[in-house]
Image (cartoon, each protein chain N blue to C red):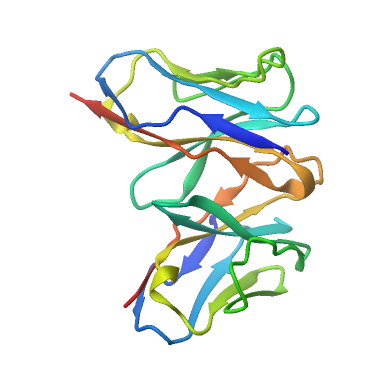
Length: 111
Length: 116
């Protein structure tokens, strides 16, 4: 069945370091792919999305490219800030508008 | 624009009591989702409505849980009787249901439920 796998955390980085969070998906077709972010005490928020192969989603300095050949959607940011500390969820769209979420990756950025 | 509104934000009650969680989706969204989040099990989909009709309730843990959506602007999740293992953060989310699976979900800030 459809599933999403992402690197387990926690990830700890120094401010201005490069961030990569790996995400791979399993699906029968070509689903839309999403990254969500959850700050402490809040609900999940859409960070970026891509709806077809080779699309690049981007927002707030974060980027992810839909790679059909490797079934991946890795999240990257060139220079993280303390304010980026949060939990990041990779997700894919599935039948009937449902979304399958990965387990989440906790990121801590230290000054 | 107003986002998804959940109430209450926090609920503390004793085991055996009835708990009702409420959700107002974003106007114009016709899909609504209830999730439960815990450290042990992560984010779990409990039930999904489309145009006020329950489509998939396979994630509802047991008969103690029930959900309704009487109209397009309101939904409830009820637990009766509540148990300590129901303690979690419950999220409501809504989206423009297109059937194309390309619409993002918009989450409320959740209800943090503690059952003593």
